[in-house]
Amino acid sequence: MALVLPDGYQYVAASMLSAAWVILWQILRIYPARVAAGIPYPQLYAENAQLKDNPAALRYNCVQRCHQNTLESIPLILISTLITGLKYPYIAAAASFF
Image 1 (cartoon, rainbow, N blue to C red):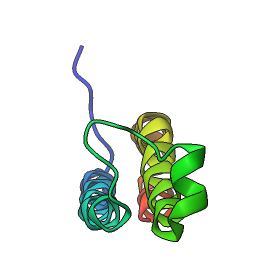
Image 2: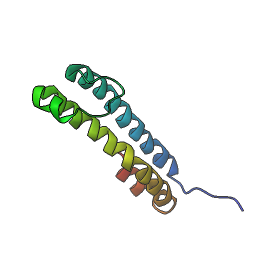
Image 3: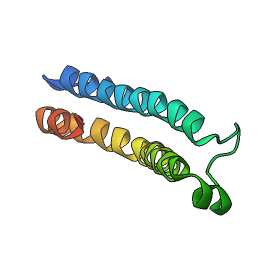
């Protein structure tokens, strides 16, 4: 039994590439924020004491949390897009294009 993809499914795959670009853009935002806040690697977030002394530490926490939220939700979004695209490829492609 072969899986037959509907017409327009290539748009689903193309729209999913946008997720990779979003993640890459977020990665490129994290490092400068980490350097500006003086947060040593591999510390994931700024501690409360660092937040009080350094306003850039709060900005770093926000950037890092945004990236972490994306990484937590992207698998469900991608799987849902792939499955929805089997029935409604154009709608799935449009919905997943960030």
